[in-house]
Length: 220
Figure 1: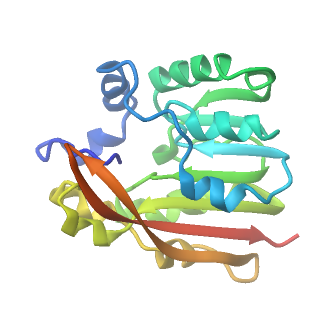
Figure 2 (figure 1 turned 180 degrees about the horizontal axis):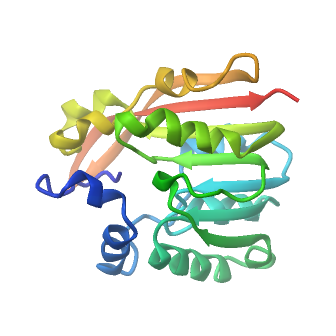
């Protein structure tokens, strides 16, 4: 779910299909900035590189950054167009990045299988209907290997007041507590569950927006 509004008349179910996102990505050479999410960089910078899965990788900025830090990354997304863009981004990113990245089309909302359990699983701004939230994020969390790390970033519900989010989709925004509630305390240690504000420029106006940030360690 981007900083730009979706058409409020768009049927909600269609927003989570391959066709919707293929069409969206095909409308522009690049719809995201190409830079990794700053909150992800903060949460992962001190981790020892290993294997990673970037869920909802889009055009691959986070996955490419992780690979540049030495991670072996599988980027997954429902859109084949996005994955083609991501592979191109990796190929342009310098020595070793393309070799440390691979890409798989996965329909997360159908709970299709994610790659083999990894040391790090990230999901940045993957917004889902509330009635699917627990199932989808439980599925994402299950892809973390014992001893591994889960990082989830999202637009926080406070962003409704900025006017940047489509009001008809405001129910897709979620809090850190929503993620934590999916994680069994017997299996997970929650290291970070916070709301972080940042400035976001849109059409010449700077807005303060809020991000949900969760980092959790799966107990060995």
